[in-house]
Picture 1: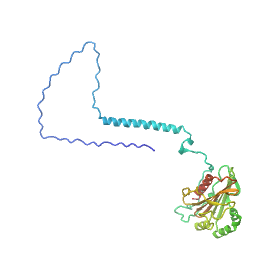
Picture 2: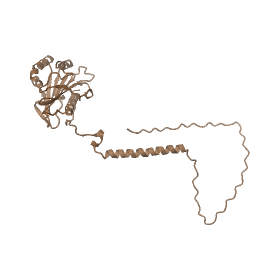
Picture 3: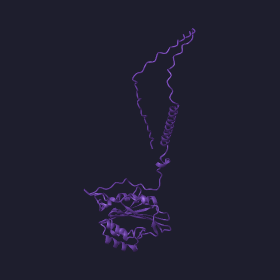
Picture 4: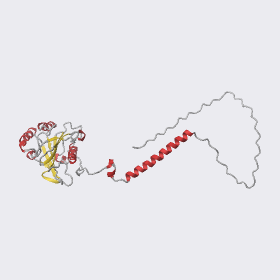
Length: 308
């Protein structure tokens, strides 16, 4: 925050000159005789003449000037000390500049893919149907640094059967029927495994309209619950650490996490509705440790930004 100094100038009002019609000059007063200066003894050093005395400013003005001068000096010393202190600190020592490792993954810099000539972005004013015209594969989030790619989910097109593998075996037939009814145009997916054993999978399913995309989530009963269970999941509930403030504009996310006690893996999952496209993001890790919350939410937010 910068200090702001306001300087106001006093308004100067010219004096009114009154000229009487006739002013009689008073009689000159008698001038007393000036006594003669005493003689200076020989050898006396000459004293240089002092400066002419100037009228003293009012004490109120002097006090104000003193206060402003002291304040300026104090702020100057404080500002200099603060600047020097921050310049000599490490970034992690300054609360607003902290860069401590919080577990997030190192993703490459993201950019939106090119569109066919004349095609608008999905949520622009010229695209009321909210259609994604970019290649769906280019809207998949890339893997972070250190990831081992999934050999089946390579970032390209996948079949309906490969997508159905995300669900429990006993539910795949019913989900397959939902997909036949909604008739998705394309399904693309990417997966990878991190050094800590966390496996990530992202599926993007594009439909002919937003109505079909929304209908799929309704038919899967996604909303207050995770709906049709994913494979290797037990008790999955809404993730209370995710809030509406985490949502990216123009898209809606439904975020869930397995609750203890869970089975051989801990799973976090989220569905995102983005116009004509549904995204399913899954993180799971084998063992009794929970899947990291921050990397999962980071992955979800970045994927949502690409879709929005």
